[in-house]
Image (cartoon, helix red, strand yellow):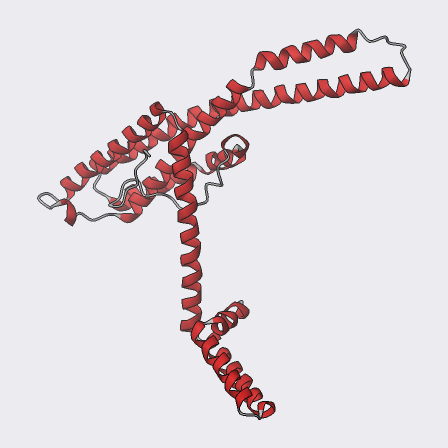
Length: 290
């Protein structure tokens, strides 16, 4: 247990600081600070020690810290969401919105079948299912953005231009005199060979980006099909526990996809996926158009 943070929180409490500073000031005014001030310090040490080791206070400190972490996560997620939705082309946003709308419609059908005659306000939220689907939709939206970013990268880095550079450099090296051993000739050869290696590395990176783009495209189709299947499952099987387990199963199957997206931050600029998930399906669903 990190006792230091609880003692620090107890000491920095504004009411404690006010009392401590007031007591210290009073000790100086008494004219016997050599006696009064140590008593104030002893009382302060006893108070901080008792408060800092109290279980309820420790829970309060932990709760406040968790709240701050959630708040930072919410702001980070909100910024990421705005960045994605402002950058994505209309067709990609429409694709996401159509999938989200489909999930909402099928959920309404499922709840109507399970609770006929009830108003929407009385419907159970089934938070676990919604949270799981929200996470899948969040991964799906980020996949769309990753695909878009890779596509933009490939367009701005023409493959044929890189291949032309490689061919040109190979010809220049081949035309160098084989027996030229002057310092200048050696520097020229080393410079050309280094440039050639750089161009070959660029081509290798380009090919990897293209392979990743194809993989991301397949993952988009797969996840979209999974999300539609889960939404339809909610209509056909009125078993919340089973549906939640299926949502968790799909989410766990996306771990490798999430790692891939994290590795492609050079193209997307996005943070890791391990952040708070926006609410896409619940009562406080966010908008995706800005």
